[in-house]
Image (cartoon, rainbow, N blue to C red; front, side, top):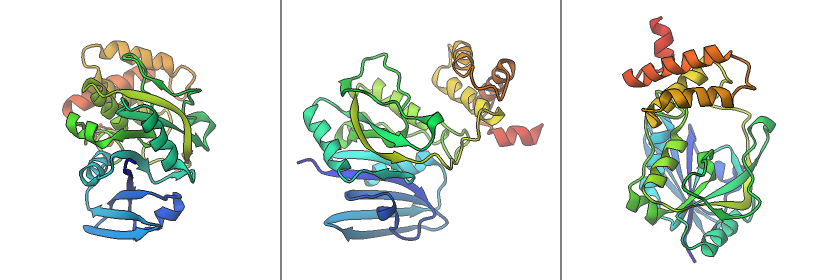
Length: 270
């Protein structure tokens, strides 16, 4: 049987209470960003929990830390606001066993926010080349050997605590796809996720569209203007800003990416 391990990013932890809070019954690596540097390890229920605490900031750095310490054959990225079903590990391993060609499998989570429901797939299936990838990091399980062979890491410019607020998961997925990794989406639900608090999402405001402009500038440099209009159309029901304002802030975000200027720095310079 494959060895399984959870790779969880968190902040300001002083103990292993997240094991209970997240209902973890598997090996786990916690990458903990705080104001100190430490390594701690405990055994529980026949499993091993390791916590690597650093004084760094940025979710990309934190996810990369979990990858550096990962030892499982099959790994699952995690955020500390998820709660797993009791049989989560068995479900994940069963899906990889049933699909031996899969390098990455996307799992489903229930959520407490009706506006941010995760896409639920009726059956497990292989993804095509043009499949959209609207998947948060905590849904991603993968074969560690495949990811290391492909040399896929997280950007340190995008995501919570970084220069630009989001997009790191999409960038990782796109890099994995470009490297030739094989993707599946799973019918299995393995837990719940809370969106009660967010470190970056403040609604469809100027900051949000500034970040999206930076994201599309980084990922779609040549067709940026097409993607800008597409995203405004996609968010047409979000009326916090007008379409004209959305286009304006995405264009400003593009310039911000070119010059590596965060939204806060841009506002401070005005």
